[in-house]
Each structure stands twice: as structure tokens, then as C-alpha cells.
Length: 430
Image: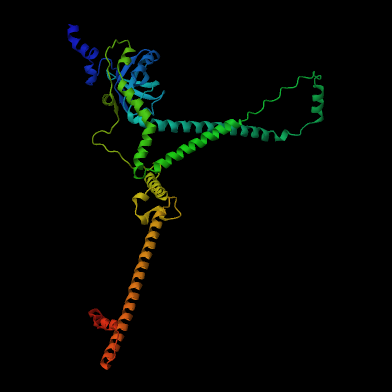
């Protein structure tokens, strides 16, 4: 009878996991862990965290192993973190666990198996690692400098405290020292010479300088290429970010595709044949982030809050400086009018194109030549007109003499008479 009663539940939890995927709490789920403003619903009981982690790590899920304590009773669980980020999750972090019966337990994280949680977290992970590495190095150097300073202060304090005993050597002390002076020992072997201080090889210095110079050249070329994109500079900046975060995002995407519940259950002794995948959407349902209750609002006024820096003003100033630098180097010259180009001003770093000036000078020269030709043509026409007027005057004078001579009966050569008789000459004389 019990087999018939629970057979459907066995199928739903051991064959197709329909209860788990329909969020009706599968039989392997031990309860809910509340930690770091999140509710982790995929919690499985474990007996040995070390052995379980050796196999469960192949699930590609971020796992938190916790010790639970309720009065004198203790137990262990593993919880899958499938949403948010793991920045504030570390061994020793405390939380509260509620089992399936509603009992609350004190939970303490004892081990963390790190794996990607989301692509968004993978995008920022290279920058967070860089900042953390810088902070660690600065902290180490500060701790070493502090220890050295404390040692020097202790030595100085000791010397100051013993200033009153300097020079107090009485005859009695000298006699006691003479009596207590032991026999002269045999000459000991000379101590070994102190090791020579380590010196940096010239080749090492040259290699370091070459590496620094190469990095500087690479950064300079990268910035020059970025500023040389002009209006495509935002796309280039996005491409630079993707070049830095792309490998981490690709690795996170591959691991999120392989995230599987099977190894977690196999480590507990289950015989799971199928792959029970936990994709990003289902993982977000398994780990709920904290949110405000319906109807509530968040107060933004805090009289004790730290003064915020005007990051928007800084951003606007940086953007204006970047645009000014781009104009200064002539990046926008091809898209601006001639009056606004940086190449017109001699104090900028833009390439000064003298072709426009030469063209203008050539146009001016051509104009001057055309004007000279016009003036020459005008002068030529004027000279021709004056010559023609002189010839007309001479013809009129000849015509008057011829008319007067004819009236007096004088003879003129036939050429003169023919000239006077031609109609064109008559017209000119007119």
C-alpha cells in the first residue's frame, strides 16, 4: 500500500525530477539557507564535506559547505549559490538555515567551491581581481614598512631609556671585571667574511627597462588607436572592455552551460543517470535575492552618510577634456568646417595642411594673370582705337585738301581720287 501511495512521488523525484523543476521541493532538498541577503533553496545534506567536494566540484556550480548547530545537535549541508555574486561569501560567514519542518539552525560557512555564477559577474571579475591584487600588494608593503618603523622606534626607545647609565664605570666595577676576566682563550679562527650584498645585474636592469618601455609603447599605441577612431571612439572603448572581459565571460558561459545537479547527488550516494541541468533562468529561481515588501519604500535621507563625490561632474569634465584633446590632435578635422579645424591654428598638434593655402595662392595668381590679360586686351583695344582715329583724321584731312584742290582746278593722283571715291572712306570721313 505504501509503495502504491508513494510510487508517483518516487517517479517525480528519482526519475524525471518534476517536483524539483516545478519548484515543489524535491525529496533531496533539506531546506533554505538565508545568507548575504539571499535565500538559497538548493540545499542538500552531507556527511563529509571533504569527500563530497571532491566529486561535487565537477557540477560547475558555486557551492557553500556549512556547519549547522541547533542546541546540542549538529549537521552539515551544501548549498548551491546560483544568483548574484560571491564577493561577500567566504569561510566563517554566518547565516540562518530553516529545514523542511520549519526549525531554524545557526549556519556557518566552512568551505567554498568557487565557480561562475553569472555572465555579469564574469564581466567584472578581471577588474575586481586587479583591484584586489593592487590592494594586497599595497597592504603588504604598508605592513612591512610599519614593522620596520616599529623596530626602529623600539631600538630608539631602548637607547633613550639607558642614557643615564652611559659612562658610569667605577674602579670597583673595573676591579670586578679584572678578577672575573677569564684566561685568554686560544686564538679562534677568523670569522667568515660577510656575504656580499646582492646586486642587481645590468642585464636584469636592461630587461626591466625594456619591459617597461614595451608596456609604455603598447599603451601609447593603444590610446593613439583609440583616439584615432573619431566618432567611433565609444565603439572602440566597448571593444577594449570586451577584449579584457571576453575570455572570462566565455569561460563563464561554458561552465554555466555545463552546470549540473547530478554530481551533487552522486556525491551523496545517489545513482543519477541523467544530466539534471541548472540553467541561468532556473538558477535565478533557486537563489532569490532580497527585495522590498509590497507597499514599502526605501528612505534615501541619511544624516550620517558620507559625502559623495560628484562623479557626474568628474565624468563630464573628463569627457570634455577627451573631446578637447581629440580636437587638439586633429581627429575631427575631416568632419568640421575649415574655420573650425585645428589645422588652421599653428599651436595645435594637428597636421597642418598647406595645400589649401597653396590652392588659394594659385587661385589668386590665376586671378591676377586673368586681370593682367584683361588689362592688356583693354590697352590693345585702346591703342587700336587711337590708331584708327589718327588714320581717320588723316583721311579727313586728305579729303578736305582734295575738295579744295578740285575747286581750284588742281590735279591729284588717281590713288588719292580712288580713296576719296570709295564708300568706306566716305563713311570713315563722316
